[in-house]
Amino acid sequence: MRDILVQGLDALGLDKSRIPALEQFSAFMLERNQVMNLTAITEPKDIAALHLLDSLALIPAAGLEAEQIVDVGTGAGFPGMPLAIVRPSLRVTLLDSLGKRVDFLKETCKTLKLDNTECVHARAEEFAVARREIFDAAVSRAVAALPVLCELSLPLVRIGGRMLAMKSSHTEEEIRQAESAVRILGGRLEWVKDYTIPTTDVVHRVICIQKVSPTPKKYPRRFALIKKSPLGVPGQK
Image (cartoon, rainbow, N blue to C red; front, side, top):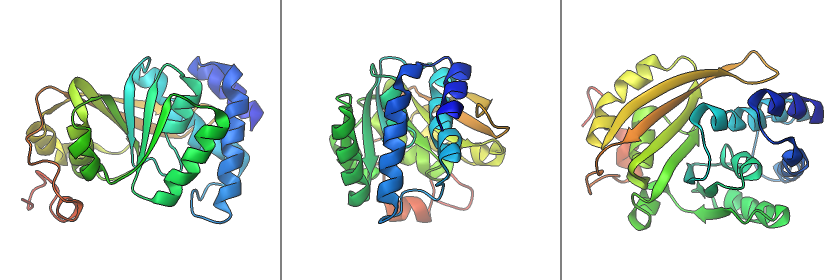
C-alpha cells in the first residue's frame, strides 16, 4: 500500500507526510469491514488506488483548498475522509443515512484526531432543512444517478459554490438527463474533467455544477419521490 500511495501522491502533487494516517484509516476500515459492510475492495493495494487515490484526485481536479464541504452519502468515508486527512484546511461534513457507518467514522476521526471533520447521521433531503445553502461544495462518489444526486446535493450548496460529482467516464447520457434538474435547482454545468487514477489505467470523471441561483424551497422532495420521479427526466414529473 505505501509504495502505491507514495507514487500516487507524488503524481497528484499532494503531501506524503499524511500517508501514515491514510494507512491507519484503511486498517480501521478493513477491521470493521469484518463485521459490517463498508467495502467490497479489501486488497491493500486496491484500497490505496481505487479508494484513496481516486478520492484524492478530486483535490487537483477541482482545486480544493480551504473550503467547507459536505460529502453526501459518504458510506465508508469516500471521498471525504481522505480529503480531510490530506487537506487539513478543508472543513468536511461526512453525511450518511446509516448510523453504523457514521459511528465508524466518528470513532476513526477521533482516533486520527481529525478536528476538521463533522460526522452526521441523516438523510440528505432532511439535512437540507437545517443546513440549507451553507456549503462551499457538495462532493459525492458514485452515490446515485445525476438527476437524483443534484436534488440531494444542490440545496446544500451556497450561491457561488459548486457540486462535484465523481463518476465513471461514460456519463454523457446521465449528464444530458440531468440538464433540466440542474437548471430547476439553481445550477449550471461548469465543467467535466476526466482523470486517470495514479498507478492505474482506470479513468474516472468529475462533473462540476456551479450554484448560480437559490434552490426553490420545495426541493429536495422526499427521497421516495426523488427516486420514483427524478426531477426533469423525460417521462417523469
